[in-house]
Length: 287
Image (cartoon, rainbow, N blue to C red; front, side, top):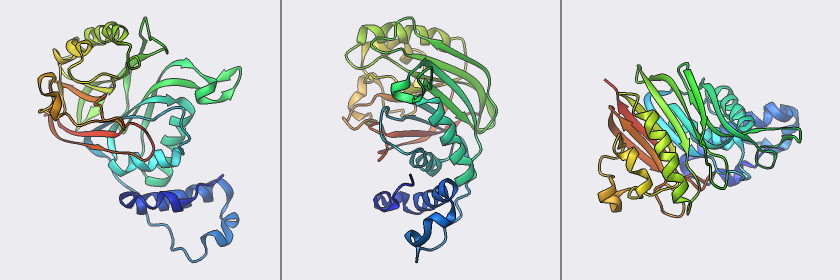
């Protein structure tokens, strides 16, 4: 079923981008003939081919289960066109569709690696005997190598883990991590998970650590991460938590771009119509 563009087009900053994406997507799904009078009088879609920003990374919790279109998600990502995108609460079939839409609708070509930690029919669909993978995923405009996918020994109320790859950001090879720590009010579980992740981060002189940590900056469980890396916002530190921009609809900072041996240039936190987590992206200096 095609998506009604009317509701989405009220979001001014996405209007041109989304409108063209939806029209092309509907044509691909149902054929141009089926659009008939529904598009009568509308102008032709505007060309949407973009280029990635080679030194930009982005982290986004997709919200799952949520009734959001993968066309919408792709349009959101294309607006910022990062070199690397880290997704959490990601279903492997959804990620594949998002990647395909990014290429077919916006000309953005990404490699993909999955960090699924469980098979979940309720969240990800698929056949009951072969449900979709659920967990993390990384998209990168450059090839990714040396992927590891680690499930934490204790995920809390739901299996959780981290993944890591080596890829290029800003033309430089770097280790990139993507994680999702245990849910809120599970501090003791997150302490153990952060310890596991920190040991791996410490092995690298330069690393980018992306993800949903489900903890505010001054939460004790993040101490081992802060000891190794800085937030992309130089003003955001555990002792200055009041200046850290929230990354969720409930006005908490849970999402991070932690940097080890890398200098941040600028960052932005953008509310999203398609998730209860905001989009966090950052431009980096890796030279």
